[in-house]
Image (cartoon, rainbow, N blue to C red; front, side, top):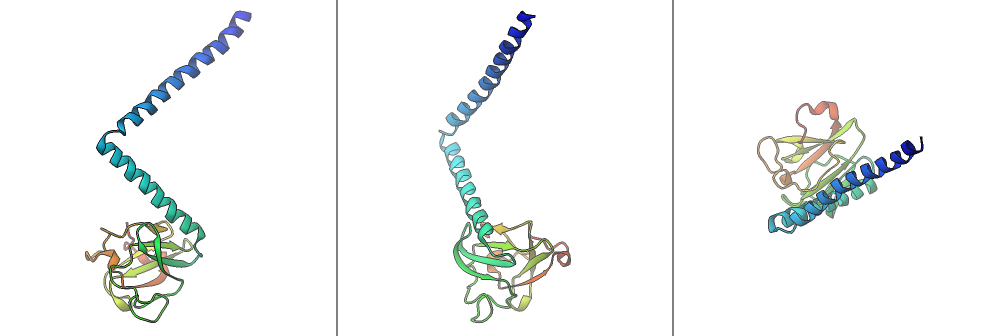
Length: 174
């Protein structure tokens, strides 16, 4: 009986060392791969992306519920405006968003209940091509490359309005 009792801890220790041995070389191999130029660049990009997501995530947690936030920089930086109301023209001097030129908005943050969405329009007065953002898309860190259904760049958004998510049909961004 004593022999069996001594074998169990020995078997457990052997198993633990085998698991540790499998983990440590994999970590070491990843670190040595990152020393190549392209891998280092990819690692840097991944690090930057994680940081960007953290910045927007922190901004989202600090945002007021029921608001759309506009930023002049990527990754929720360079605050331009926030609004809980509809706005017919982001470029004019009235409404909740004022004097925002076409192409100025580089990232967006949206915080609302699950039933609400915000429709972004390519034209003033809620006209032209449009898409919806919902709670499942709390922020867009880089509007570059994103487009309205007609191909207009999303950073050319001119107006927005709040709507029920159920009214958006297939016009969701993403």
